[in-house]
Amino acid sequence: MLRAKRQNPRNVKQWATTLAILALLPATLALAQDFKTISGKLYKDATVIRVEADGIVLRTKSAIVKLYFSELPKEVQGRFQYEPAKTTAASSPHQKAPVNVARPSALPAAMEKLQRRGLLRLDCSEADTKAWISPTAWKRYDAWEKENLTKNLAAYCHPQSPSIWILDKQSGRKLASYGPLLGFKTY
Image 1 (tube, rainbow, N blue to C red):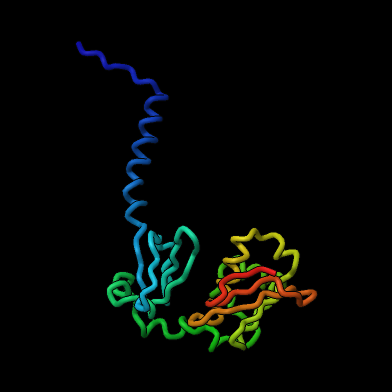
Image 2 (cartoon, rainbow, N blue to C red):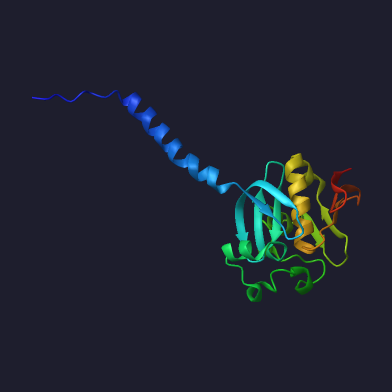
């Protein structure tokens, strides 16, 4: 009679973990790809982290960026099932929203939370957007979060040419700025 060899439970767990990692590895490698805009800007090894009505949000080694479907070639638009008729309102929220009031449902959760608590006020009425933030809220963010918040607020108000000034809500002092030419800067 054949006797089954008894397996060490520790070895079984190690093999299961190894197989799980190997199964996920090709999927993660397949997700990173290159994206090229119609203007020629290339985003290498980018991962799509979110698909929105008016564009896709990519994570690269150096940044998180939103590419609007209008900036992407037709084949990429088709891959994400982009329909221009459905996104006309979504692509220009600043034209529909009242001055000084950002629509919370269109903002990421952190920004929405700041607005609800009265720690953030946003003015999208001018080309250079202004946002007033509580200094205590601003100090809680690390450098990456400050840059991400600044870029998201700028893109929310003016998707085609985002630029913004982040100001201290109490003193009006400049805290940060972002623009397409100078990039992100803290003061």
